[in-house]
Image: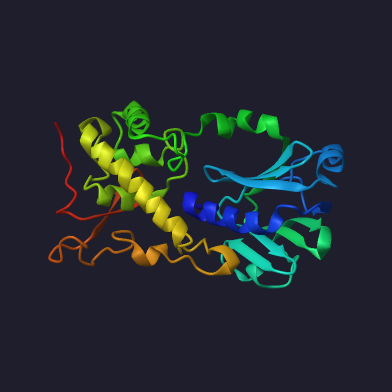
Length: 292
């Protein structure tokens, strides 16, 4: 599943192209991927102008001038492809990003003014596009449960420490992966941030000091910002704007580097284990499990 930097990459690409477009026609294959009433579509979607493209955690939000919002979750194999005077494609890296559309993976098609189209493709059919009143978006179950955004200006080390301490008896990695604690962090960026802070992922939260958590806070922000700058990772399922592979993974310090030297200690090799049910990359010298 995409992590925060990958979805932010999609948002940035769409924002440049979609805002100002009017949606003229919508078609979809099944109600599973587009679970909306025809009356809402006719009244609040068709003829509406796109006024903003936002992101909350790993979910995309396309705001309309009818005070409704398209809420889009790409899940594992979703794509959003824009075709007009310019082209844009982001998501699961198969030929649908550059091939003729619609194709057999196309679930929803939005015909726009100026001859443009936006396609939502999803091979495995886990993703969805919901049309909701903008004011109601914060009230859907996912939005009520998800934690704060790690890159927002009002997200401070104090707030981070308070939230992570709620998971005192779990591993620090499990706490980072918990979307109710913090939004948008998945396996790649958890490993990278913990290595940067010199914390072993299996260490219980209660055994991590406040000073270490402040360092972890800094590393999370550094890693996420770098990943957004580089267009996200190439973690099999994702490419960046314009359909090009993200380059962050080339700068990864531990993720998928098992058997290679630690960037800090050339005489120590990165190892891979399982923590919180996920493949986990650590340096045995940088990161040791501490118990107080």
